[in-house]
Amino acid sequence: MTRIGLISDTHGTLDNRVFEIFDSVDLVLHAGDIGNADILTALNAIAPVNAVYGNCDSWEIRQRTREWAELHYENYILRLKHIPNKKFQALSHPGPALIIYGHLHRPGLERRGQAWIINPGSATQPRNDDGKRTVGLLMLDKGDAELNIVSLEDGQSIIRQKL
Image (cartoon, rainbow, N blue to C red; front, side, top):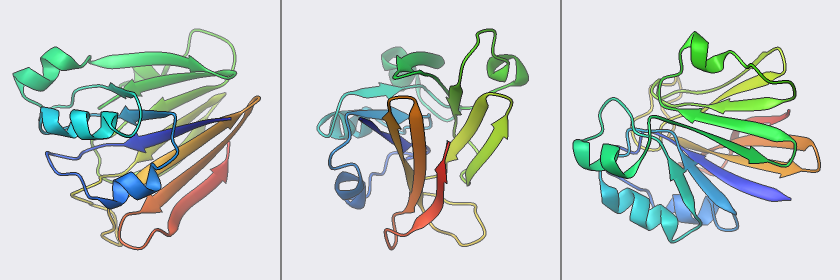
């Protein structure tokens, strides 16, 4: 099983609860608006980090990250971008895909064809109705996937779904 921590929109702040929630992850994906390089260093202490820059990120962050990333884990293609457009979301390959993005500061999950569109929400500045800061845990195991978006306030699941 591969456990992946999903985080976005940290804007230079990292709550200590992220370390607890991401305790046994194999990889961390940061979907942009990182804020400063210290965030990447701190997350890398948990697990290897793959990050993309967001619209608020500085030149320093943009030099250390990419605009988008594509990774292959288990039977899934994972695409990571801060603000995905329709061209980025259009898949030219067969098979299941997980598209992870940030920017909205609201957790979300939507299915489009064989793709799941995932937003882990904001780890610092939520814009969702309940005002909870969130991160995500993605579990991939032999073609099965499960998403759990968790509140940093109380550790409760906001979204839990088999994909």
